[in-house]
Length: 273
Image (spheres, rainbow, N blue to C red):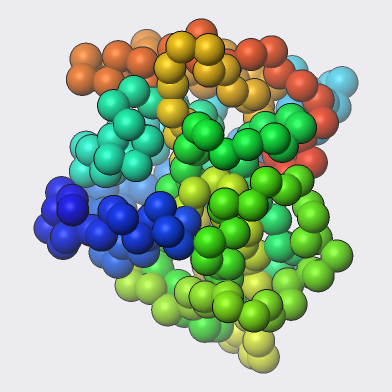
């Protein structure tokens, strides 16, 4: 059990169901600073520049600014209660994999059923990887929901094996569409999930803010595929800023990753949940 966020967390549930829901997990002071950073990331075109670079468009080199340059985003990536919880889920040594930041209109589209476990080809689930989905403004039905398929992280399947189902309701799914501000959902990255569009009218619903950060277990012989072509730059920014703070020495080390490959079908859209 972990109580870093002030509420006991049933860690065992994560290994059975593949997810944890942490309402109000993030401190209000941090979220107050995160929201304008997300707005800046979207409104200045930095997010689009990042997407274009990931799509491999020749006119776009690595972006001059990455998410971890922004002060509050860097703090979120190494939020101590989060890292302490990840130590229970991933083991004592793990690495930061990537972070996406996005602001979507409440009436935005959905995304088909998929998972985000980085392995090519998909062959096992021996080394856990997690995604921390930070809904800094919370979730309401008029914003659309996150649907999860509990236990599906134990399947060994390609990311898009359920894509033909679109965002259909599946037997046994769990729908999360009401979360208070500052909430976080922790997913085993192999858990199938979908972003479902809001039903009906969304007038006045506001924006749907979501920051998605991913982490993976490290150890002898373990190397992960990166999902951003400029992944070394991201890790270098984190090291330059001293984000690991000495307690997590492996968090931003390049040796835990192998060369970037170009077949990242989900990367161009950024956060998918």
